[in-house]
Length: 372
Image (cartoon, rainbow, N blue to C red; front, side, top):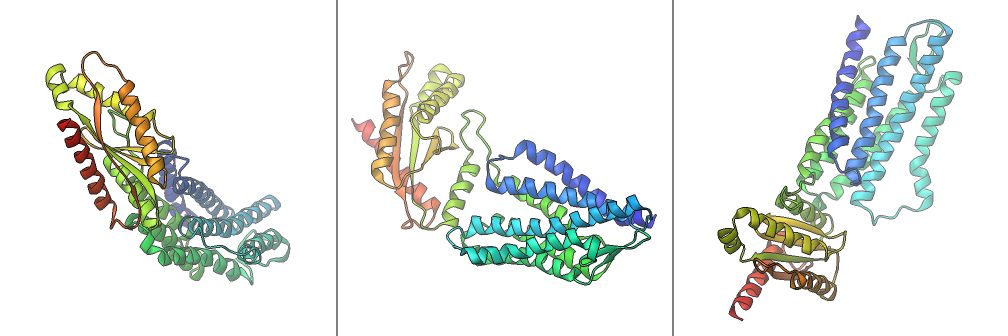
């Protein structure tokens, strides 16, 4: 009964994380690096929760098979912990400090503790360094058990330091995401290390990932049902995040508004008006690169993020869009747009200021076209 109470938190944590993992696997964009690391981390934590629960169940069971099984489970527990925390550190470094170069000798020094811990774990059944299982099948901590724990938490701490140092380049939700994922397992692990018999490290890691998924949901790409363009919130979040992470980010943006949509709605009905919006977006999509992003700001107003750094390239994309509209033939009505376009750089205080700027250019284009 005592064992059942000990492993209960692992079972509950694993089931909760499994449910979240299945939902996330279905809904999250798997090509996104943050989503990918979340799914991989969740899978490892679920494995560790199961392994830790099984090790508690077989602990104290005598017999050759049970002793061998206990050793294998302990090896997995000790080996996966530093691998997971090192992966967290590398991921954080690549996301928030990609320009920080680590010389090869230092790269080796960083990963060396992971290699040592894995080797010590594999050899512990023979030498009892990290742990040992006695003749009655009872698990005991080895004389250098603390070595593995220290370096496991050290990588998490290093990752949090990178996050804190680069905090000014993070959106608030991203800062919360990485901080929570890093801090909770550290707290749980320290408690488990200090108080033998309490299982908290992997369950706290599971709940950290559940909280992380909630935050990931906030940044998940949502598409507009009518046009397939990104929603205003998704577009604004993604571009704001790019700017926050790299204040020197340079890109092009095109603001467009469909001309005469109200007249189309009044004369042919809103169903035809929706078709006009869909066709306009189709013409735009056919003129831009797959890397470019279209966001619907509302109604008949859209904005296009263009992966370029100069006006020549931006104007080339804009000309392609305009040519598509010129070539489009519709017997019922003309389908036209007004445009405003410019290059974003650090002279603009934020994205709102830049959007206001190209919105002004779009209305200037609209007034010019009406006066002709």
